[in-house]
Amino acid sequence: MDKFVITGGHRLTGEVTVSGAKNAVVAILPATLLAEGVCRIENIPNISDVSAMLKILKTMGAEIKFINKTTLEIDTSHITSYVVEHELTKQLRASYYLIGALIGRFHRADVAMPGGCYLGLRPIDQHIKGFEALGAEVTMEENAMVSVKADKLLGNAVYLDVVSVGATMNVMLAAVKAKGLTIIENAAKEPHIVDLANFLNTMGADVRGAGTDVIKIRGVESMHGCEYSIIPDQIEAGTYMVAAAATRGDVLVKNVIPKHLESITAKLVEAGATVEEYDEAVRVKMDKAPTHCNIKTMPHPGFPTDMQPQFATLLCLAEGTSFVSESVWDNRFRYTEQLQRMGASIHVNGKTAVIEGNPEGLMGAPIRADDLRAGAAMLIAAMAATGVSELEEIHHIERGYENVVDKLRSLGAQIERRTFPDDEEHAQRNAG
Ligand code: EPU
Image (cartoon, rainbow, N blue to C red; front, side, top):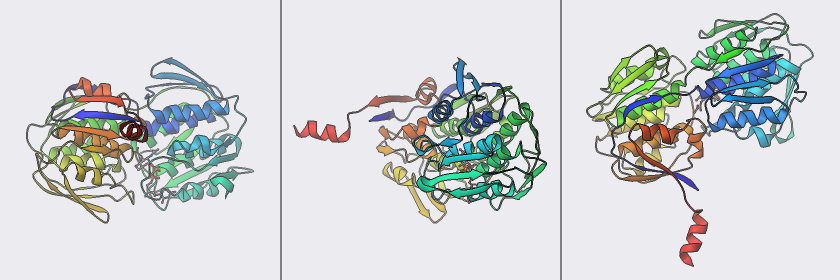
C-alpha cells in the first residue's frame, strides 16, 4: 500500500505552478470524438483521471501521441464503436461525457454508468432530460448500461432543474451537431464550461453564452481538428493558496486566472491572509492564526464545493467558531472524522459543519483520503499539524493533483510517498 508520510510544522514558501484543469480536460478529451481531424491539446495535466480517459479513447480506437509532457495530438476519426464497458467507465465520473460526445458523433451511445468520488447520490437525470429534449431515446440496460439512440438530433430548449456542471457540458456535446438551435437554461457557469465551449468553437461549433446561465448552441454540419490549450486548474490553485495560509506561509501560485479564484481569495482575505493578484499569479501570505469565518458552497461564481474540505481544515486552525454549509452535495463531510482523529473540533449537523477552531489544535495521526478533495484537505491538515501523519488511499489525490509530492516539497513541505507492505501481510509477518 502506498502512503504519504508527512511531518508537519513547516511553513510553505516559494513558487508553485498550477497544471491544466482536471474538470475541463475530462470533457475536452471526449469532445475530440466530434472532430474530423487531429486535435492538438496543450496544458494536459498528468493525473490519473486523464490517463483513465485516454485509455478509454485508445481502447475505442483513437490515435494518441504525446508531443511533450503536457501536449498531445489525438485523432478519433477511425473510431467506429459507440460502446464503452463498465470496466473502463468505473474509474472516473467524467466518463459520462462520452455519452454526449458519442450521441453527437454517431446518434448512438452505450456507456456504462460512471464511477468517481462518492459524494452522496450522483444522479444523471438532467443529462438524460437534455438528451431526450434533443430527440434521443434513453434506456437503462442490464449492467447499468445507459443506452441512447436518436434517428435525428433536433435543437430544442432544455431547462435544467438543478444547476449541473455535468448536464450542461453533456447537453452541449450532444447539441453541437444537432439540427437547429438548442438553448440550455439554468446552465452551470464554471470556468470549465467556458473552456469546453471555447474548445468546441475552435473545432467549428457555434456555442454562445457559456459562462452565463443561458447557453445557445446552433448546430453545425461538421467539426474539424484544432489547436487548443486547457485553462489552469482553479481548484488545484485554490488548494495551494489554502495550504499556504494554513502553514502560515508565503507562496506565489503561478499559471492561474485570478478571476476564477475570486471567491477563494475573498474568503482567504476574510480569514486574515494577504492575497496579491498579478496577471497570471496570486501570492498568498499569512503570518498569524486565521480568523474564524463562515462559508456556504454554491455553483460558480459562489464558493466552490471542491474547496470546501480544504477551507474547513484551515478554519480548524482559526480563533473562534466557524460554520461551513455544503449546498451542492449530500455527503461531503466524511473527511471530518479524519480531522477529529487529528484533534480538530469539527461536528456535522445535517448540511453544516460547526468548527471550534484552535490555532495549535492539529496533531499528526494515521489518516485516510476518503475522496479527491478530502485527500487534499488531509494533506493541508498534516502539513499544518505538529508531528507525523501517515495518509492512506492516496490514489484519490493522484486522480486530480499532478506531481503533488514534488510541488509540495519544492515549497518546503516534508512529505514522502512510501510503499508499505499490505496490512494483512504485515500482520502475518509480525505474527511469524
Ligand atoms: N444533479 C442532479 N441531477 C443530475 C446532475 C446533477 O440532481 O442529472 C445534482 C447533483 O446530485 C448535485 C448537483 O446537481 O447535487 C451538482 O452536480 P453536478 O452535475 O454539477 O456535478 P458533476 O458534474 O457530477 C462536477 C465536478 C465535481 C464538482 C461538481 C460541482 C467533474 C468531473 N466533476 O461534478 O468535481 O464537485 O461538478 O461543481 O467535473 C472534484 O473535482 O473533486 C469533483 C467532485
